Length: 109
Image (cartoon, rainbow, N blue to C red; front, side, top):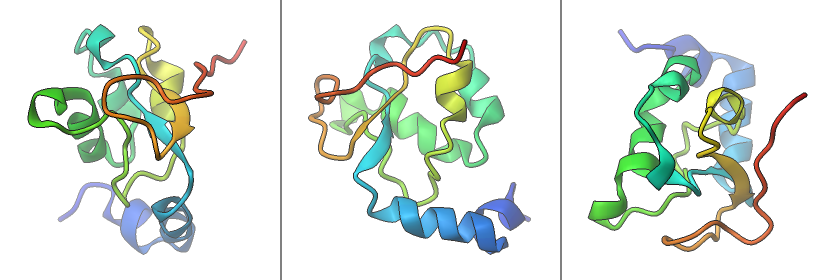
């Protein structure tokens, strides 16, 4: 029926993360979306991959780089797999043209 329907919509933990993330000030931001090489790694690991495309490809439609979709749980999997460092954690108040203040790439050693 729905891909990841249980995890993203019905599971109590997934639903809780969704509610927390709905108004959370910290969000995933595609701050360097012009560096995206369309490798699709972020889509492969994201439990809700439909939230990524507007942030990556929405510049010509006036859509900002901040992923504000309620289905994004801010899990950070896209940050971990992106070899181009397109994604960072930032604020929901980022402007549409650049990286939000204080946004830093998150890399694990």
